[in-house]
Length: 302
Image 1 (cartoon, rainbow, N blue to C red):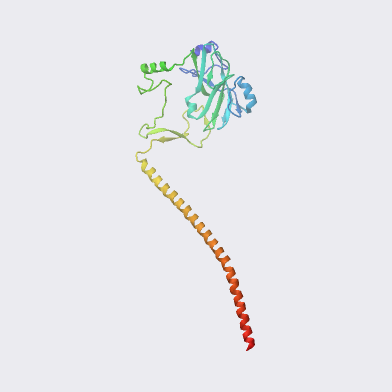
Image 2: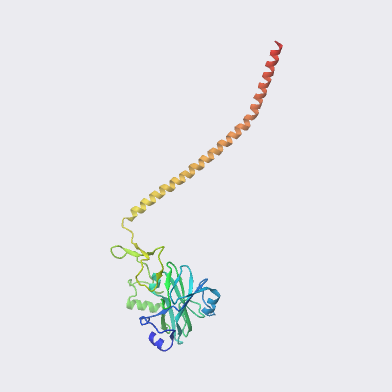
């Protein structure tokens, strides 16, 4: 079907398709010559993508000789392929699996659309890729393939009853009693595979630039293994030590507060004693002066 759409002009590549570009159920989409760095992601709505890019672009980047797309930035790249779909053909796009493994967020935009990765039946116009690397800076060039597009004739969506019937007939998931009325639910298997009990990969914090054209050439992730059967011992020890440290910290804060309060009370008491003793000391001083005067008077009479 895809080859027929190309021959019939429904798919209009600016350059001849690569030999391996047509996949069994999809067509790889190639990046064009220019990438536009824009302020933020957007949907064109009632305008064209080119018009929105003109108002949002920060600068242009030529991709002919390759260019690095930085993490945390949003880029819009016109694709080499454009469409002139018949009225009964629609399309949807999604990132290639290799793009997802590199944690590159990408989706396809068409003119005058209100959704990403969805191209309505009868659409005539260009296609654009929105690209935003999330973990690694990536090297792309003209012709790089980050997304793929699938084509549908008529209404290819199944209602809940049809999905249940298909599950009963073809067994869509392992559980024969699974509820598939609202689609096929996908879970995450954390039991671990192989002798090392591998459950997934975690991206490294710092890596060099990743060339999207180079396959299986980078070590950018650390394996995440299933927890050790006796790992609870370390967890329990960690909890005990942490609790002891926090308790000591709490006791120290309480003792320090009590000591500060005690010092304040002692200071207040000293002030009160001083204030109460001052009149008595003055009176004693006066008495001493009177006694001294009497002694002087008696000494004079003798």
